[in-house]
View 1 (cartoon, rainbow, N blue to C red):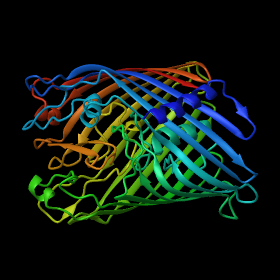
View 2: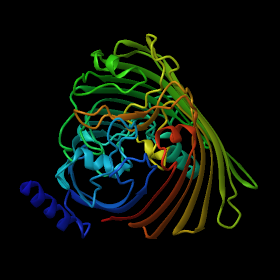
View 3: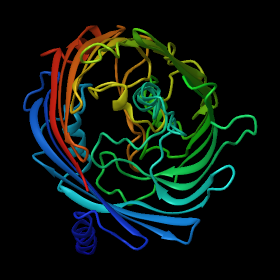
View 4: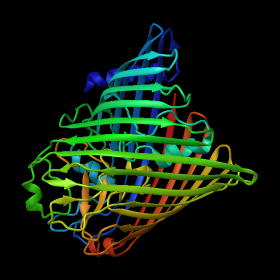
Length: 485
């Protein structure tokens, strides 16, 4: 531990000046967030559903160049927690579990409040002539849906905030985050008839992390394969076709699958999870004298095996928006609907719950108390830009479970050797989950500094009330500071 601390200190000292010496370039990213939870209350004696904690994430990296066609990156990450709640986990037989993310951090890091680990360490070869290809080998971050981002600012925002990481991502909101060990190959201008397309192929294994401070380890029992073709039919549209394969051979008793079968059946299911997925996205902006109208369509279909069960599932997102670019504050109003499949029969040989794999769920559930599995989400978003340094975003969500026989799911995928990565709370035979209103305020006093204030209120409906009988509302807030050197 002391050895890693010395290395990080050296990198920080060099990076503060953003120095560039010869072929070496340093960079530092520092994020501090104070989070406050007032979670739904199950009414258990001695359990604290209201608490505040602080977390610091420091990432320091060095980039180097070798000749004209090779480069590398070494990046270390240091995470520190303060004030994690010790009594925010509802005990059995209550189904409530962790009462907010502070409880989850504490569950997996009892007795530890910090660590240092290798975040990225890779070597890559670039060919910038002709079709501009890149081959990367080692440990790195990977976000599906970020291949060759469009130049149109509205399309780029939609890709970052409404497309990417629905299935595979670095889980960047949580403090330990996730990396991938593997190989990545990309090539721009892959099709001779198009000069704005990209082909991406990756074979990956996720690292430990997310909520677990032991971020150096690789999850060797999980493998992910990914391929995509991204193209721009014209200057105002963006499209992608992708295929993804997820393989997980972790077994009970260490890791038990989370689904709506009785616990005894899941404890005896030692079969592997093997799920191929195919999907697409299409986004388009339509400029007019009033501003820009945007349209988004995303979908995926899944097959394969869920242990002993046949897996068949899917999801679809449809969104529409308009930004008044010539009006003060440039208001951007968007509405959308998301629908994923759920499982209606726990005793048959089929598993029909849409599986979110290794996602970054907080992009689509900004209050991280649900995800996109067995989910129906009708929502509206309003974004305002009072000044170049200040932006506001207001979201309203009405949430249902697709199948009342299935669970209310939360989580973002595997993060260590002993947790499946998702939790499931029983529905109690109901579908209506909650209504949620949130507001985020981002202030950027300079290009390297960002302050964010986030406020959210959730009003629980039937599903929440069936799990939390003492209080069916929740409040979540945080203040975050980010600085880059």
